[in-house]
Length: 222
Image 1: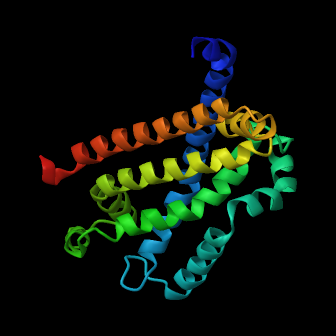
Image 2: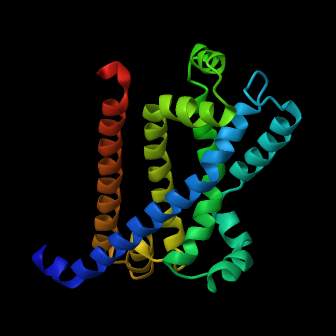
């Protein structure tokens, strides 16, 4: 075991850091897109504070179509766009483009679901007090849904973490790339087993952290 980590320890550490970089950065950029998309889906639905049924229907279809694209197909399909943005289609930074585009519509639906859990009475009270739409969104919808949004964030992180393993098989780096190169191409199964264990540990850590954060932010637990 000691000999194994002497030989592969540095490689596995680098792969773990690359995986965390792709996961965290892609999640950040995906939320920059997905959060306003989810808000738009919520407030423009029938009975929403900015009701626009036609827009909601069309935009909802766009989100659904983007969600339905298998990640690996999307990754190859947007290679020209990825090269245009970052100058290459290989490496951890290049992987952020398909990861972000794939995760954004998924996050939009997660956000929409979280916001729809808010009691309509709270929104009506804010309207009666003269709150603007922007104030209702920022001070009521988003604030009241923090516990649910945090749970959604943990799901998003874990989902994107899984996607990074796929990007690793096409040269994006990270633990997925190590598992593919050493476990699949070179038949060094111990390396592949360790990468699987590391991925499982990352998932468990993410889940624990955000479960605690969600419980602490939930007013019902205070």
